[in-house]
Image 1 (cartoon, rainbow, N blue to C red):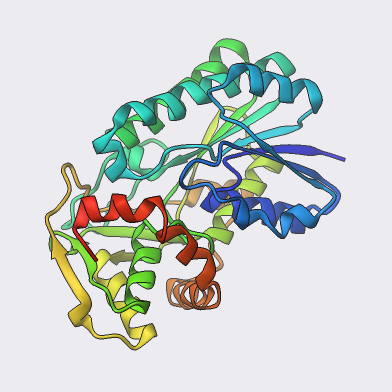
Image 2: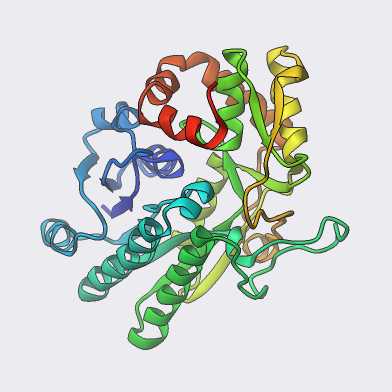
Length: 339
């Protein structure tokens, strides 16, 4: 039996990965380590808690004593690090939180893996590459694209990537890194574009869109991302970076209009707001390497995925209503004004 430590497993992608691994590898033991900050939600893992192969441990990856104690209690075959501060807007307001968690927390995990000879996988982002021009649809991010960060968030993730590769070269620690495009799907915290638009539209509240909504993102259904990470753990080459993209490019405005169309809501709900500083224009991933080496490909096209996502939020209103009724409301109102 293999045991895997999933840090940040109460968050969006991490929780989806927990469920994926429990389903795909029923004989594996899955341990979730999460600090349960504002974006971590124990309610998300309610069904996982019923599985005898799952264990939840509350803790912060920057807490060296807590992390090393956990490694003394359990022997891990893999560590997959989802734990991160991830909202660009918040990183602009308070960059020090992002540097602490995303860089120093990654260092603590790397040190624990080094001491215990545990394979480490760093979950990163395409935002470390910066952006691409709108007038060059032929250009895509590859694993060889130079790092060119635009925000404190992306800079902190790029730093963690560099640190991870340094541990591979300096100490010989078996590591891999994946850089994914924008994820969407169940359990997505409602500060991000798609869940925010769904929640606001359902309540007939304004849908804030930065600038003119022309920014382009490549959308990746979260279960496809989980499958890719699983394949990297099993067959990926140590010391390698793998780009994971959905080939589902849409402008932000197109995404918002699609949500409104599915819900039968008027586009009059769209409210264009002042653009955020350093807003990247276009992200687009070339996933050729992971397809050729590991046989991965995205199974979910955007039209199918967004329909499934909207239906999930319709069927799980209490989950997101509990979130937006709390601390997030204050943050939202500070950023966009009263709803």
